[in-house]
Length: 393
DNA sequence: ATGTCC
Image 1 (cartoon, rainbow, N blue to C red):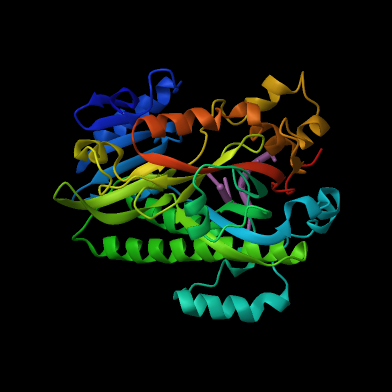
Image 2 (tube, rainbow, N blue to C red):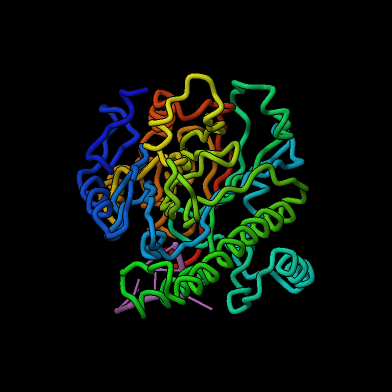
C-alpha cells in the first residue's frame, strides 16, 4: 500500500503511485490549501487536477472553521446509479437517441406534484431554481447508460440488487444555479475567507449548503426518472453519493470539517468511479477500518475519501486545439468502446473527449494498491448524454 | 461549475 501513498508534507498526502502523472500546479494548489488557517490535513486523490485556485480531486480537513470556497459552487454534486428495466441486448440505441431529444428542457407540469412531494419529504424549501430540477447542466456533468461488462464480486452485485442483464443509468450532476447562489452569497460577504464556527453566518451557510446538497440529490433523482420515462423504462436507485460538500467529522480524535472537492466518500458503502465517456467506469467497495490488516495511519491519509473520476489530463479550452486536426465533430459522437455520445455543444464535445482524461484503470489501480478499495464490477458505456445547450456550430 | 462571458 505504501507505494501508492505519498507524504508530500506532514499535513499533505497524495494517494497516487509514482507513475501516475499529476500536474504540478495541482500539487502546488494542494500544498497552498493546506496552509489555510485551521487546516489540519489535506489529501489529493489520484484524479487530482488544478482548479480555480484550489485543486479538484481532493479533500480538506479543517478544525474550528469551514471554507465554502473549497467546496465551490456545485454544492452536492455527485453520482447516482440506477438499475433500469432495459435488457442490454434489447435496446436500439439510435432509437433511444431520438427519444432523448427533450430531456434538457425544464420538466413539464406533469412532474409538478412529484417534485412538490419529494421536496417536502426531503425538507427542501427553496424554489427559485425549481425550473432547473431534472436538468444535467454543463461541464463534466452527464447521464450515461452502461452495461455490466465484468463482475468481480457477484455476492456484492446481488446485495446491491443489480441485474447484470439490464442496463444501468449513471447520473452525474449537482445543484445547478442554487449551489452557485449559495457560494456567491458567501463570497460577497467574506471573499474566500473561511467562516469560524462561532459566527452566525456559519450556521446560515451550513443550512443553505445542506439544502443545496438535498436539492442536488433530488436533481439527480429527477434526471434519472425523466430519462427512464423518455426511453419508456422503469428503474430503481442503487446508490447516490455526493463528492462536493463539507461535512462534520471526527478524524483521529479531532472534531472538524471535511471538505470534499471532487472526492468520493469512502465511508458510505459502494460507489461508482466513472471513467470518461469513452472509458469504463468501476463499481467499487471502499475498504473500511473493520477490514483485517487495515493500517489506521492510512485511513487518516485518505481522509475517508476516494477519487471521483478519471481526472483531467488536459485543461478545458485546450482540447479543441489539440484534437480538431485529428477528429471532426462527428468523429467524437462515437467512442473507441463503441458507445454513442449525444452532445450538441461543440466546446463540450472536445473538452470532455476521452483523450482529455486519464485512463480510469490507472486511478483504480492506485486506489487498490493503496488498500482503499475492492473492485466489484467494471461498467461499459453504451450511451452518454451531455448537454446540447449553448453553441452548436 | 454557472440560463456564464463574448
